[in-house]
Image (tube, rainbow, N blue to C red; front, side):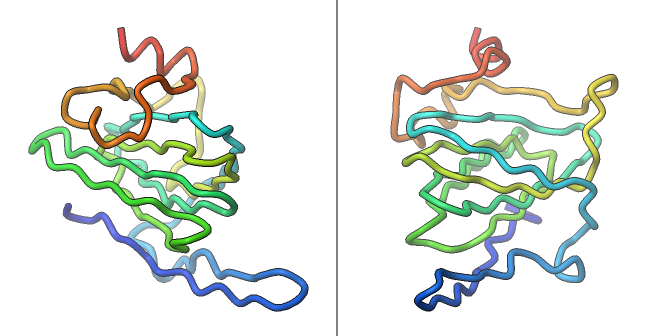
Length: 154
């Protein structure tokens, strides 16, 4: 998928724990404007969301394992990858693609976004998590969803 990038992360571990350099501004297609961190319980799906004005996301799972799902709304092409403890990578997603993630375990998730969120002029749109083009990519058929993501399914 054009513009989507999987970025290997190097984890340095010792008896104290670990350190990872998540991103360098010089290595991304656009500068980020906001950083978000979420905690999700196993079974949660957040998304699919997309941005008409082009907010890009950089996804990284800080602890646990997440399944990232991306949909090109025009071609129907999909991308999925499990990221986190066993696969320390970040995924850069151009905002015009619908994107989301599933908590395969309880997880701590970080996403840099290239635009600051403005609730009075939100650029976030939704596609149902169980859209026929992506429903088979999730590990669950009965996820825990936000009201907004539930509304996208109806």
